[in-house]
Image 1 (cartoon, rainbow, N blue to C red):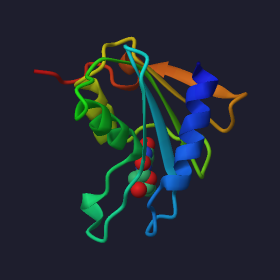
Image 2: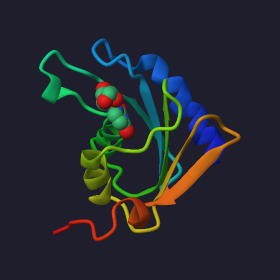
Image 3: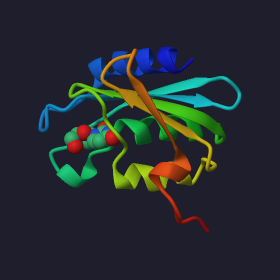
Amino acid sequence: MNKELYRQAVKMTERSYAPFSKFRVGAALLAEDGQIFTGCNVENSSFGGTICAERTAFVKAVSEGVTRFKKIAIASSGGEAWPCGICRQFMREFCDDDFEIITGNDEDSLRVYTMKEILPEGFKL
Ligand code: THU
C-alpha cells in the first residue's frame, strides 16, 4: 500500500502548478474508509496564497465529508519531501499520533514517520 500511495503521489506532481518555485509536489492521502485523495501544490502570484500538496489532499477529503485518515505519501521533483510546519499542524487536526507520513527518493527507498514523530507535542484544542 505504501508503494501504491507513493506512485499516486508521483503521478500528482504532473498536476503541480509551480511556476515560481518550479518545485513540483504531489500527495496521496489514504482515508480510514479506504478512499484515496490526491493533491498537488498550487502556487500563487501572491506567494502567501500558495497551498502545499498535502493540504490540497486534506481539503479535498474534508470537503467531501471524510475526516479520518491512515497515511499520506508525498513525492516531489526534488525527491524526498517532508511536510512543512504549516502542513504538520494542519494534518494534526485530523490525524492521531500513529498516522503515517511516507516519502522517499523512489518507491524502493521509502521512509516512514508517524505524526507524533514529526510533530511532537502538537497543538490541538
Ligand atoms: N511544498 C509542498 O507542496 N509540500 C511540502 O511538503 C513542501 C513545500 C510546496 C510549496 C511550494 O509550492 C513549493 O513546494 C516550494 O516551497
